[in-house]
Length: 260
Image (cartoon, rainbow, N blue to C red; front, side, top):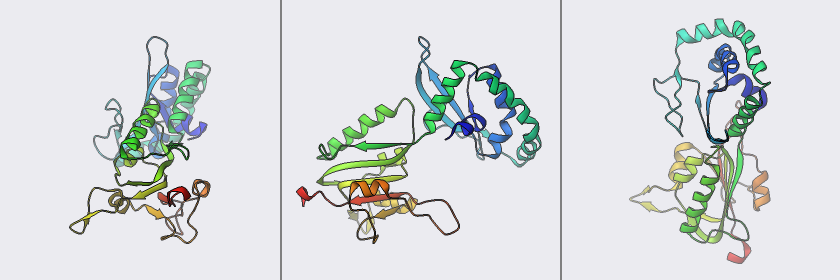
């Protein structure tokens, strides 16, 4: 998310009187352009950031809470509201000058920086080439450590890279679902393909089928990446000729030479 989107399309709770007036005027913008409401929890002692949460400002269902806290709830959307927001779009823009004045405050600028960082995806790596995960217990521990590192800002994951020793098989989709990355790279890890009564058990392939991810490897794709560097540079294909939406992809990198 860019600075302009954070300013115009994001309401930061409890960010001051001037910001509140500006955000009120920008309500039609958030309604029409799928804006967000952000809650920044701070330490009362030194005013440092403890946690950051967000929720869509408006949602078609009656109750819709943030995935990370029940303290943030979306407002309801309706056809009548939509008409009112369209009428109030231009007049509301005049009030955003109050939000601009609020940025003379260092605290407001810091809230803006934290909110922008909260929405900015980052790459997460579990293990490394030199110290890959040897078993499922080690992998579980790596997930836990990275989750704790990201707990404060709740930032989205862009690319999740998992390093295995070449013999590790991975099948659980639970943790990957929670991280919701755009791309997953399995380096030296095999996807578990167990079946029970002709149906997949609770393994990652089930989730891939449900959410329509694409698996990228030498068996499915002619120009599939064969190295970690190629996988990191790989751009997921678009879902069709007439859309800019791209597939979420899971890329399997061949086992390291030492493991073959």
